[in-house]
Length: 94
Image (cartoon, rainbow, N blue to C red; front, side, top):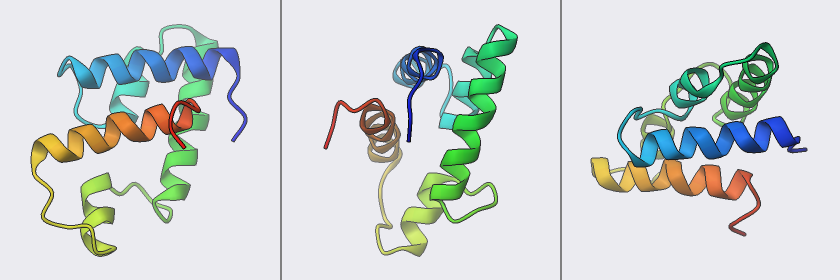
């Protein structure tokens, strides 16, 4: 996935929102972090990418995890999984 400067900044803002408990879900964090029209467009593209990675539709990460054999993760672990997924999208994790 190509990460433009706007997408990168938006992902960083969304990750901060999740870290500080302002949002639980990546897609909502992206929507809430987007202020300008350019950021709103980037948010839409990122949310579409995430949806596609979860098999289409709008499935929550913990539901995908449970359906794919990664169930029984507590709330704190799912939060960390979301933070890690954003870090991976930013190229910070391999």
